[in-house]
Image (cartoon, rainbow, N blue to C red):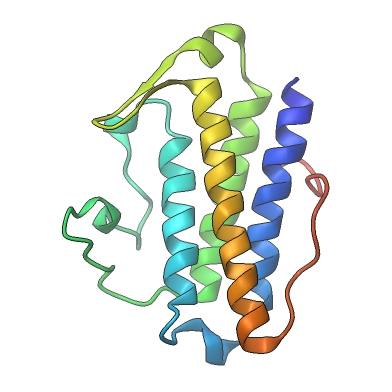
Length: 159
C-alpha cells in the first residue's frame, strides 16, 4: 500500500513540478499570480506533511503568511528556483513519511483548528490539494502559452 500511495502522491507532485518548470518568466508574476498559486500549494504540502501541525515552521525564506486570516501575501515574489527547491524538499519529506508509514502512524491524529483527520486521511487530502493546484496551473499555462505538461501516471522515482 505504501508503494501505491507514493506512486500516486509522487505523480501529483511531479505534475506540479512540470507546471512550474514550463511556466515562462514573463508569466511568473502577472495578474494570475502563477508563482503565488504554486507557493500556496507548496506551503500546504509541507504543512500537511508535518505530523504535529502546531510545530510547523517553513524553511526560510518562506514565512507563515499563509496563515494570515486577512489573506496577506508573502513579502516577496518567490523565484522559480526557490519554489522548485521547496518542492524537492517537500517531495523528499512526503516520500520519507510514506516509506516509514506504519499502522500506528497512519492512525495517528492530525489535528489543527479546522481538521481532525488520521495521518492517512491527511495524506489523501494533501494529495488532492496538490493535484487541484497542479491542474489550476496547467489551466493557466493553457490560457497564456497554449501549452501544458502532460499527465503523469506514476511518480518518476522515490525521493
